[in-house]
Image 1 (cartoon, rainbow, N blue to C red):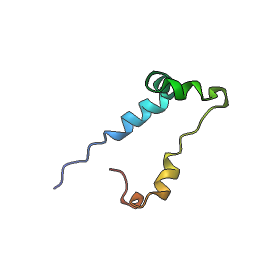
Image 2: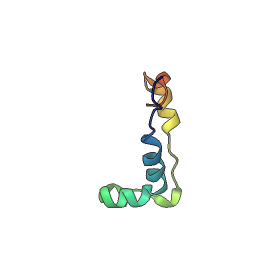
Image 3: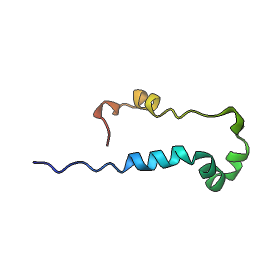
Length: 60
């Protein structure tokens, strides 16, 4: 029997999505200053999975 797979990616991804603007301000202040945050933003992780060659392997 194989041990259950640990999901380390989801908590990190959720934190980054929740605190994306402060994350950008802290780590990438020049990029943050160039973004019009009033327009909002959408994460495109599902779209990226469609174009990545190994996307059909599932979550890793």
